[in-house]
Length: 138
Image (tube, rainbow, N blue to C red; front, side, top):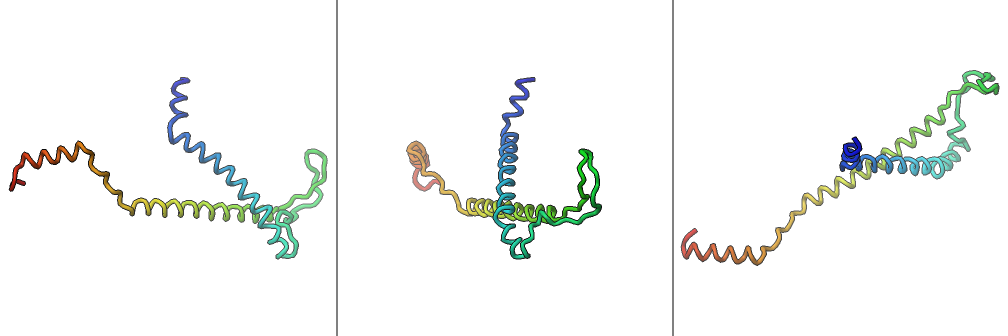
């Protein structure tokens, strides 16, 4: 069972998937920081100093929670707006990466590969073949 697990874990596609998940998670944190720390503060100033995370609709005030604290029941639509902006930026970034990769693949496919020069052995064999055919033979 141990050797089977090792064989499974070392397959190329499993390792590639694991690397993709780790890089994707790190990329998500970077984009979230970009949105939270760089894009949203100026946007909040432009719309009158509003922080999207503070936007909420109070459904019921003063509810006693399990810990004995009085809290409001709220609909946090500001967090939802923040998540949509995060998603759109991540989707745009992934789109740009895929577009770049497709362009590079097309360039590689469009550029014909130059066949390698024949080796000395191939040249000699070609000369021998041509000499054995004799003049006028095809």
